[in-house]
Image (cartoon, rainbow, N blue to C red; front, side, top):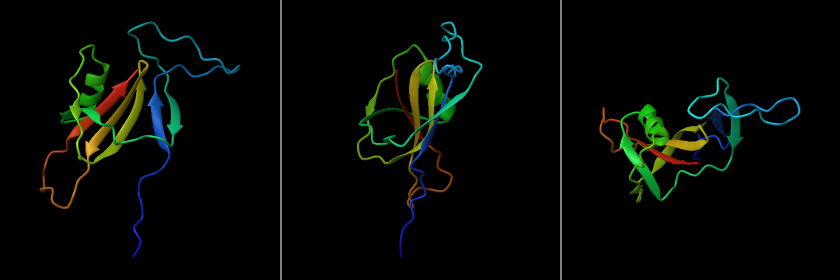
Length: 122
């Protein structure tokens, strides 16, 4: 019996960057602290979930975004042999943010809370 990989190799990245104009140039960035009213989508086929250092755990994906965009530097922890799967990719305010969750296994208890982790960099 063959195993089928269900993960898509193309990952969509939602971004708040300003979209390019007709001449291919990007519009000016919104003033500091303001978010663009536009959504731009990019894609990548090269997104790793094996980062050696991660930030977390968090209870929600939204918490991961808040931490990544905060001015407070968060302590990174060693991932060790934990298996993570990609939940979301975003670019917000020039910050590339990966939101990951712990892969569930057959041994996981029913009703166990999902743990979210993040990796981010400018």
